[in-house]
Image (tube, rainbow, N blue to C red; front, side):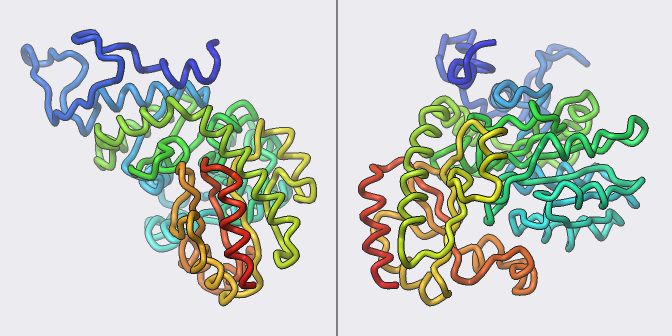
Length: 383
């Protein structure tokens, strides 16, 4: 098998046979000419399939080591595709600390179809084991979690999901925070990997997208069917943007981690920051596990400022770091989860996972680390 960077640059992306173009063209066509009834060149209608999309899906399946990949118009569209294939009475276990829009989707929309959801702390494998029911179809986890940076033992949860030959439960892992460069869930027994391609895979904060990477013919059949029937697919232009981003994924992730580690250590040593959540720090409760199942620690850090007022005062002073939602871009982004990504959980829901009003989540970019530290230092001086 070729190395990661070689696959990122070449898999699914052979030079265009017509023109020799090195980059996969943006096939901005909704339909395709057919030679006669039932005879076409592999494409009929772009909701069903599109050559630019095919290239991206082949590339992402290769990077995650899956059998097939299926891209959607956003990360949430990918999550919706995964769960809307279930039927009334099916049961799904989900991590209690996940991106806030997931429980909103599950609780306010998908549950209306009679699909039942149970939320547990997946960093404790026994909670997952106890939650398994005869009708459980899926366990969905984030690792590290958003935004509390908890690390789940993928292999342990996979073993629980697959413990019964006549009742196999699929394990889905949201790998957005780590990207396939730092974490490969399928190698630890996961069945499905999903990403918001909006984040590190794209890497430039200029396009939405999501992907499901499956491991079985059933996954391929199901997710192609959802793409065809619901039409929530990724446009050719945004497929092109992700293909462009993936080419530099390895070099970006290396710099993201160098900067992330520098920022995490700075924050951990700051007298006015009582809590820093980053798997790369030895004091992180799952640091040893993270070291075992990840090849790097990424650049997502959550830290405590002490209060909503402190958080806001700090954010107002930032000059380089950008205050905004999302993550994984080349620029450093800082968000306030309680009012942004996890506002939908409500005060009680946030308290249950330990998310306070004073917590901030930083996605460290690839700027010069010295400039980032100087910006954070002057902003934290108001605390």
